[in-house]
Image (cartoon, helix red, strand yellow):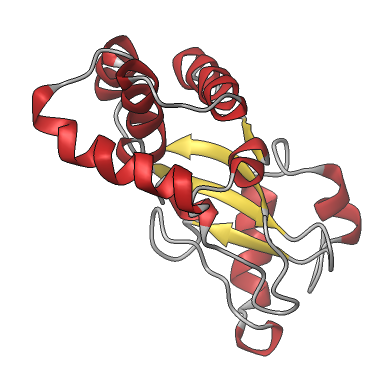
Length: 174
């Protein structure tokens, strides 16, 4: 899942947006992360069309700064943690400079989350990212969820799962 997707995801039960996102593991290899973060803020000619689209999305509200602000990076990767902080700072401004657009694009559209958790702050439901298929968010209604498999996955990530999910998560908790 690319962080950009958080701009359009909402809870399938109550339609709340934004969802809180906790990232556990990146699918993007560490060497590629290092390259992405090192190049962030250095516009590339081949990405100019991507920057144009991003500028339009910032202008028309497709990009929701609150959805990016709801990310907690617990991957242990200092580069992505710093890049998230930079991204949030850029989103608080107008983000019109090419360097800013490049940095935003690289964080939101190139990095890929392998495993994580989405949580609706409104209804308390949580949804795994990468439980069945790596990097795929699984936003299913309660009756279609596989409790045994998801609880096993939740236990695997127990040390990183927000405490509220462990104790009061819906549709089930540990």
